[in-house]
Image (cartoon, rainbow, N blue to C red; front, side):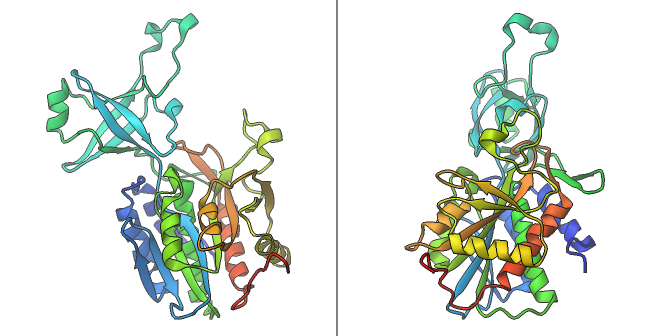
Length: 359
């Protein structure tokens, strides 16, 4: 049975193409829950939109598998008298890729399209080239003045996303905006699907968790871990492919698309749980890579690990090129192998395991 069958790929495409910026994830979460519904016993949601599908909800021992659902975006911050729009970030949006990009501005009247404008090369002085910065990039929606902008439904605080959609490059490279980290929500849903289709009976409660607001500081994970109070958390996110130009492997390490899931070493990663993942990968012949983080992983792993007096947590990452751009790229086989590794690791966890630091 193929993990990424036609139905799964159709869901992936629709899920990636849907806009779900930080703070506005609801439509994507509804889509995700609809897909997950046949594979879980019940759902938990919270006031800010994190969604959790639960298998064996009455079990006392609780294991989380988690990804995050939000994507980077912009906010309308200032509208000039002649109808141009200046922005601020919602998450880690990259100002350098903005010029000449189409955008969707989300308003109560619907989507208003626009473009990030940029001065023509003819008008720029080569010896004093301006580079894109947060204070000089701007959006043009074709309005003649501020009044017309406001009549179109655009106001300060409207959220702005890129409309770029899912593509497959050279048969096995998936490209889209928001792969960071809608891929995570997709992969944990596939784990739930495999458990259901293979009729696996877990001895613990499994909480398939799609958190909101990771891009602004792990906020969704911080909230939902207090609700679930898990014993174990397996988190999946993306990490950098460091083989493309202008990335220093001495500082960033070596990880590459097509070479398998990336297992992290970091203070927040519980040593015994990480070794269980590695043992599982070796036993099941799943290729994997290793990555070291210094003080923190920068992912929801940190939020789970340091909650509720400490939760045994680990991170399995999907290598990705061009993070926080509209052409984020992953390898199909890596996605399949992250799913396999999470699935096989769950089957290798016993009810009530402590993963004690002193074992």
